[in-house]
Image 1 (cartoon, rainbow, N blue to C red):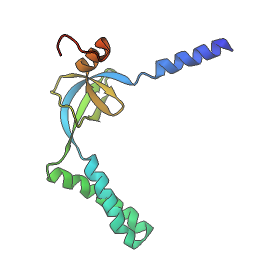
Image 2: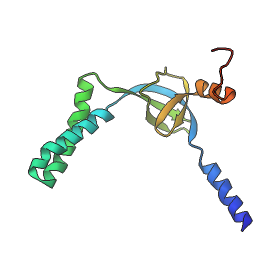
Image 3: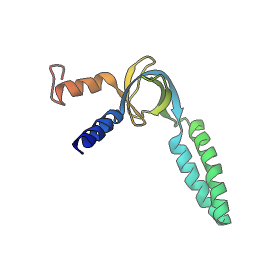
Length: 131
């Protein structure tokens, strides 16, 4: 029984690798906010026609919400990155800017600067000689 627990813990820790090294390929636009707002607005307007109208309104609102956000120039930043496994993913990064070729780390659906994270791990969040 003890070996089974050790095996389960080992497999869990090996599978929990949520931080991946990646490289930025290009910057793209992200219209998630516009799509969500358009979908909610369309659902509320379409609800006049009942449940089917709400579904149709939400779909149409989602389509036009993303386009409206893009037309207004309010798109958020997203980046196409190539992970260590060779997969290409589009990940959001509203607070950080990266250049093509930068080394980054992915956590969930966000992109973080690999060098800054390495410094935080090295110094444990303490002030360094560079601060």
